[in-house]
Amino acid sequence: MNEVEELSKVDLKSLPALRHILLSDLHQNVLKNLYLELGTGPVLYLLSPSYSVITPTPNETISDFISKNEALLDYLKEYIIQNLAVYSVLLDVNSYFAEQNNYVVLARLRERDSEGRRYEIKFYTHSPRELMTNYKDKIYIGRDFIDLFHFKRKYFGVKEIVNSVKDQYEALLDKVEEKLNEPLEYKSFFQEMKESVTELRNESLLILQSLPPYLDFSKLRGKDLIEINSQYRTINHFLIELTDEVAEFENLLRNNNENNFVRYVTKYKKDLANAISYFNIKIIGCLNDKILNLKAKS
Image (cartoon, rainbow, N blue to C red; front, top):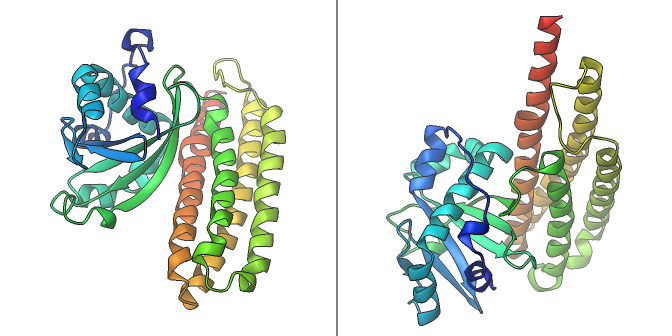
């Protein structure tokens, strides 16, 4: 874990200016109540919205980092929320849980070997009254990926989603021997999931190669939009098929009381469900709206 070290190297003046985005009340409230989790060495520090260290007891490294980088942390939090507003539906589809917890959301950053540029962020929500006493009871709501120096995402960020699906499947495999009571009993499920994950990734990357990385709607014709929409819908279908398999696997694990492993499968299913919602709402929904508006004008 090297997030504190890598963020210390980032010059705030070198970062692009924050976009002017009108955030919904949901995103505004989460921004005000956003906790950050940053690692240094083996320790993960939880910072309050005002950057006091909640846990564990701060050392000189984290205290010095916070005192020198409050403006950078302000930028980081707003940048995270803007990314969620434009390129995610995590908060939208989990708004009930966030609102029940007074919009308290925890953002756990993991630097992705990019010298402080790219991060994977896992998001959780938690009751503010029990955050100190029952931290482990936090609710996982999803993950996202940000590039501090490049806000606009190629292919709506689909390539990152597809690669993450593969990475998370491999992370599941790493836990099999330790967490499953009877690993061999589920061999067929892992094989089916592997085949679906491989098909999703290979076919999706082929499709993306045929599409423009960024869409200029002012230059696209109606038939072009329809074809692009169809291609993204195909990727979504692969996600839906994989989700059905994972859900079946999850149910079997629960019936067999494989409690030490099933929670990781549930988290994986959550990531897949979030991806499907993102396709339906932000990609296919957006393209459908553009297509209908073109037809209305013709």
